[in-house]
Amino acid sequence: MLERITRRERSDLLIAWLAISIAFSLVYIGGIGFGGRIFTGKASIDEYILFLLISMVTVGIGFILHELAHKFTAMRFGYWAEFQKDNLMLVVAVAMAALVGVVFAAPGATVIYGPGLTREQNGKISAAGPAINLLLCIPFALLLLISVAVDVSLLNRNLLTMIGMVGLQVNAMIAAFNMLPVSVLDGRKVLAWNPAIFAVLIAAAFGILLATFLYL
Image (cartoon, rainbow, N blue to C red; front, side, top):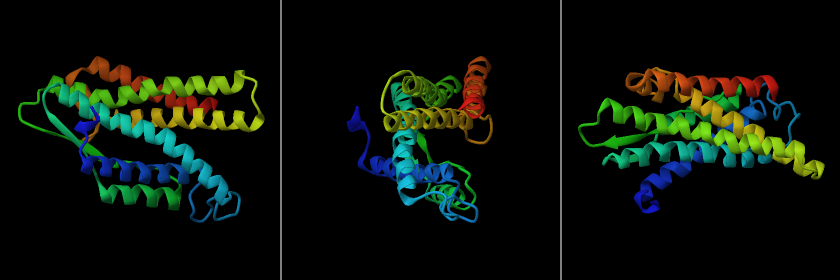
């Protein structure tokens, strides 16, 4: 399976993964511009590095599996598919996170090659990415519950809680953003294929995301 990921695609995935991990970690510390926690001295470099490492795990898993879900679903239908980074959007994502503490992550897209892609195939390929992110919410939610239920040291408990919380929120965010039925996002193609599946995926994504903001 891994041999189907080209060297250029691996490079693009790695660069995009690092860029959006940096962007998300900057958001969690409020950016580095005026009012940001680093700028005001409320967050140390050590704290930022911790958030960066957590983001690399949580965002990395969510982002890479999202794109690979598109790729391998397309390949099941007999098409060649390959992730391609968008350098401009990666710069925009990091800059917005640093200056205003907001993530707008559109790091690139999985491009499908070959004629004859049907609406059903396109819908299933598009649904695969957000569906993977929603499935990933389950282990991160369990990790969050374990951090509360298991008797561990305070340091380990805080770390497990942080990883569970960020992983749950980030994967819900990726799913919710991609399920918006606009432009080239997954939601538009899923809606055109099957409105019922679109409704289930977008309701689940925004429901989990809202719950993370209300209860975490």
